[in-house]
Image 1 (cartoon, one colour):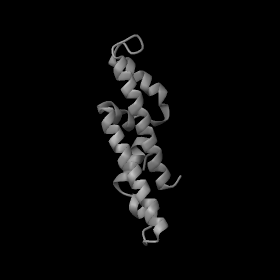
Image 2 (image 1 turned 30 degrees about the vertical axis):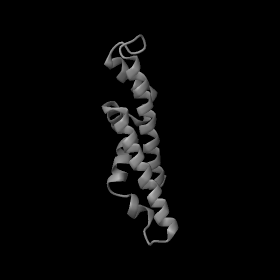
Image 3 (image 1 turned 45 degrees about the horizontal axis):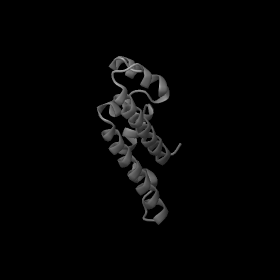
Image 4 (image 1 turned 120 degrees about the vertical axis):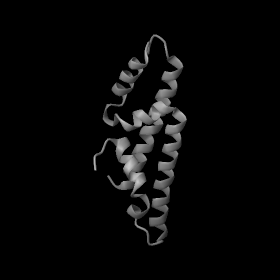
Length: 111
């Protein structure tokens, strides 16, 4: 997976978690999630491969997760534009650093 794919995958994960969190927050407390702990357990079961950072961000508030996802998508789009436009910037030069570190944390990839 190249860096742009890693960044886009993290954005997708954040959006999914944000939507799940939004639905779950409407149901708290309720029969499906009688406690916050039950919500956390359900979230972990639904997204077992990307536990951790994405879960944490989405639990702050769905809007934060969606904003972070939008930033990651923007970085990925800019990286592709730079590479396609022949501006001399390799995709890694645009997308590396913080965006890639954030994406890898969300995707559960150790560096």
